[in-house]
Amino acid sequence: MNIGILGLAASGKSTLFTLLTGQTGGARHDATSSGMAHVPDPRLDQLSALFNPRKHTPATIRYIDVPGIETEQGREGKLNIAELRTTDVLMVVLRAFASDVVPHPLTTVDPIRDLARIDEEFLLQDLMVVEKRLERLKKDRAKRQSPELEREQKVLLRCLEVLEDGRPLREESFSDNEEKLLRGFTFLSLKPILVVVNLDENEVGTNPFKNPSWATWLDRSAVAFTSACATLEGELAELEEADAAVFMEDLGLEDRALNRIINQSYNLLGLISFFTVGEDECRAWSIREGTPAVEAAGAIHSDIQRGFIRAEVVAHDDLLQAGSLAECRKAGTLRLEGKTHEVVDGDVVHFRFNV
Figure (cartoon, helix red, strand yellow):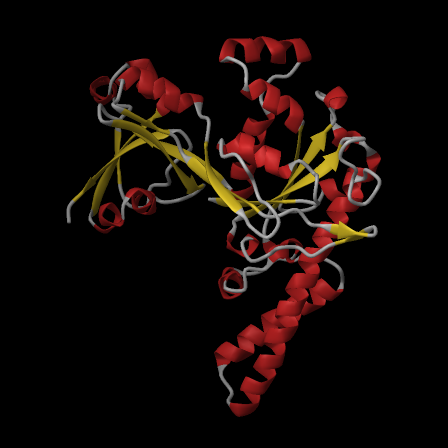
């Protein structure tokens, strides 16, 4: 999964990128940065404690930090979109903290205004792509008629109507075939959005989305919301785990904002995790909810999918309770499943295959 991180300059997005990936630097000027974040999962930790494997491999997310949207004389600047088009989710970091040292590029702090401007930029970029393609289709259809060109023109005209109405494409319903047709355009306003409000330290633990001004955004489809304080997260990252836990308890925080960001990303894409276990490695794999076993096998290796025979499946909780796969077989909680079995979040799976 690839997640693009963007926001106005001085929003704190590069700080969050560094904290998520452990990679210092972040995006600068016209250069992007990318890094991997491990997905925290207590279930994988429990399985590794049971099997004591040589390798412990959590699922990962690739974050891409693009340069901040620069502004000049109170107007928002250009959005660097080349890298963003390759992502699965757009993570928009909004500044909600004041600073005398680092002024807001639009002079005043207003995260809702900033989000509206960024989302408007998504629409404008997509509108240009649609208009350009429709012009080309008009010329192509003048030369030859084909059902494929007609279908493409029809769905793009719908997109044009939606965008000209000021609505993002993620709010429109498309059929599976239409979504497949649109996939190649990598429309920005079709991608799900994770909104992260970067709070001031004195607002940690509060819910900024209780403000009535957020109401029109909270009901939108394919948009998730969370908050963080990049400064506080940086302080927690420098502490030992026990000290960090005490610090969080003092602040009344139940979990790290970084964990919420990762979990929200999973929820937006409808992702779940299954596990493979053994003495060599305990590993988490990410797939979409509802994925059949044969396709889940392909997440590990295409040869396993091609030569799929059966999947041995046991729930994570049942394995921990039994203490071993052998005991699960005795108890009947380890099942043999076929290609169409839908893998469930938390399943421990061993694939039988032959190639």
